[in-house]
Amino acid sequence: MALLQRMTLVEVEAFLDEAFPQIHHGGRVYSLDAVGAGSCRMRLAVGERHLRPGGTVSGPTIMALADVALYAALLAAIGPVALAVTTDFTIHFLSKPDPGDLIADCRYLRIGKRLAVGEVRIRAAASPDPVAQVTATYSIPPPEPARAAQVGK
Image (cartoon, rainbow, N blue to C red; front, side, top):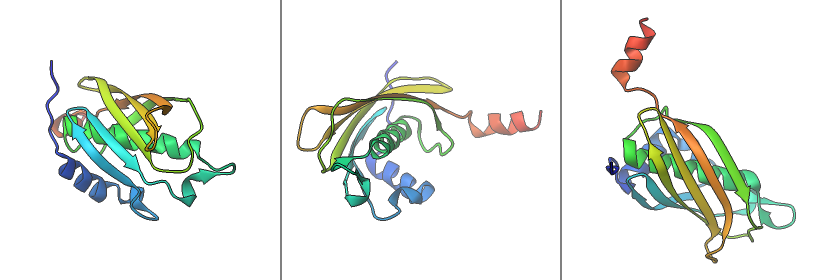
């Protein structure tokens, strides 16, 4: 079954800005270049705060980019669900990125009623070669009426 796109790029950005303003703490560094039904391309404008000693982008910075990109792609497919959360995250660091913008290309392999499994390939903007590969699973909460019924039990 083909996925439907439930949110546009502008809608996903507006939702992230409203529900998660903390991702822009210290300046707007994440930007969506494209979204589709369960996919997206996101750019991270790497600054001094993202670097580690030795002049490379830190691992936590790369992991955060992957997580935010996967969440944006999930929103595009399922709509504005603030309580979808990461339940599993595996990253393979493939090469040391030089300082500079990073690009995350992600897509979902499967989006079910309760779980979604996706992958992300991250590369330096100046190179086609990947610097990291991520697979992750998100938990999707039940719709609002189902949650209300569960609380009453």
